[in-house]
Length: 375
Image (cartoon, rainbow, N blue to C red; front, side):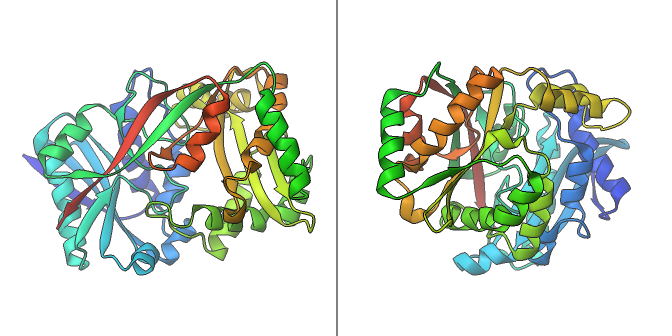
């Protein structure tokens, strides 16, 4: 007998909610756990500024008193208003390989969504695009990344059996870092730089980049990603929050800004060393020794870099600005000893983004999917 319990969104309950996933994947060599404190902060209404326009409900499934699954229901009012839709989201979904468990979890969110007047349930998605999204459907033997969901192969089978269908796919690429900047890329970068009077900016001071381009960076993300699948525009409060959360962690050598002759931001490339192995060693905890593994991941030797974000102002897209970004970043990657780069998820239909990999040796190594069900 499966019992579904809706959790009050307290820190203790949300730690249990997050820990379930970590316990479920214990010993899996491809799974990369989140930091429990980060996930709890994302799920707490008083911490996450997305709750200005979102609602959420958290459910766990139990059998004989033992946790066997979890799921979140999320309502993003901003996206619904923007697209004139009545969609609810499900996310943070994990369960044992038991159809009774997955059915009970999804039914709980479906019922919750109907009571909210929603007509469709989609997911897995988070509150916004800066949360993890997309259920893995290919690449189960590939090491996950800090920015993506890892899940068992049986998840999608359970959803399809319950009537869920494909809504959208993301693809991911593993890219070889070349020994030098490809000649064609270097040539295009120089042409673009002169033609549009563009300039590459690098920073050494976190305070300077925050004060001079922190807000502009996230406004650029809003402009560049507008129109993408279920994109949730970042509010001013979210931007203030993410300036500290993200820019405070980055190695600024791995951040490249492109500005026009007036100093307006037109492109940004943000990378960081792969934290996958460090997070595996930390098992989601900063204490007692998790901080050591994470610091080692940030500062120590690493042969893989994660391409967290590439964004270009719409009027400059398809004009070679990406070539200018990577012409600057590739020598940095070489200096740090990176051999491969993770693209992280890109919409399968986003040819603008995927065309930038034509300069490199690469392979598509993962695919993930969002599903929908009419309620």
